[in-house]
Structure formats: C-alpha cells, structure tokens
Image (cartoon, rainbow, N blue to C red; front, side):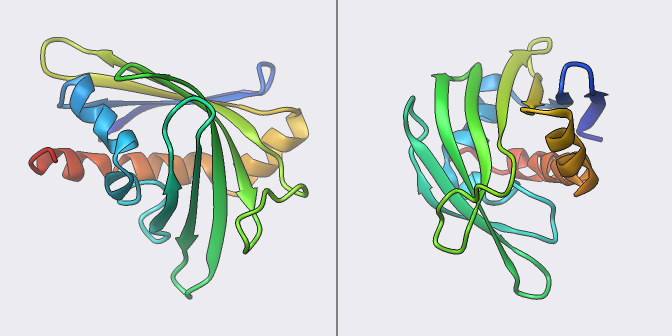
Length: 165
C-alpha cells in the first residue's frame, strides 16, 4: 500500500498523509510537475482530473476539474506559493465555480508537499493540508478528503512503474 500513515490533528488544524514510493524523489516530483501525470492521480479513481492550466512556479496557478461517475464536474484551483524541485511544493488549494473562479462559499487550505529520499531508491511523500478553522477542517474531512487523497495517492505506483517522460 502506498499510503503508510494518515494523521488528523484538529488542534493544529492539519491533515497529514504520508506515502512511500519505490522511486527516487526526482521521479516522484514528475507526478506533480507534469500536468498529464498529475491528472492521472489527483483525486479519487472514480473522479478523474483534467488539468486546464498548470504553472508550477511561485505565483503560478493550476486549475482543474474532476469528472464524477455521473458526468458531474467539480472544479478546483491552486495558487502556487513555494517550489523547491524536487523536494518541496506549497500551494493554496480551493474549490471553484463552473467558470473556474474561486468559490468563496468553500474553505481553502494550504498544502505542503515534501519529498525525501528513503534509502537509495525510494521516496517518502508527506502531504500536509492545513485549514483556516476547525469548522473548515471538519467540513472537508467529512466530505471524504482523507479517503479521496489516499485513494489518489494510491494511483501513483502504477504511474511510476511506467517509463519516465
């Protein structure tokens, strides 16, 4: 199993998911850096993503939508804060309306991704999401965020088994 730990910390307003991959950090970084790879795992398997815009540089933006089993579309956006390839990525993550504009009725979160070598041929990926309030954390966790992110991360192993692009 890819995901090795899930920690919900209401006091710190944080959800942290750790996964281990049998690939070097430079290869694992590509699943974030390449929009075609990102859309193959971002979100649960039953909600495939389509990345519309992808500027993974500080101040850049990523926009996407996920399509549900019934054809329903759910839009999201990132505002990229920090990039330290291939070790660290930080972005603000939020929901969007059908036009791709941030949805002010839904909370945003800060996502911090860390990739660290685990031995000579593996990587630990830590994805920490922090929320503005306990209510925002509860809302998103109750929507299945932890399960969805874990399922999405679980799709990366198959992607890493393919030749790097």
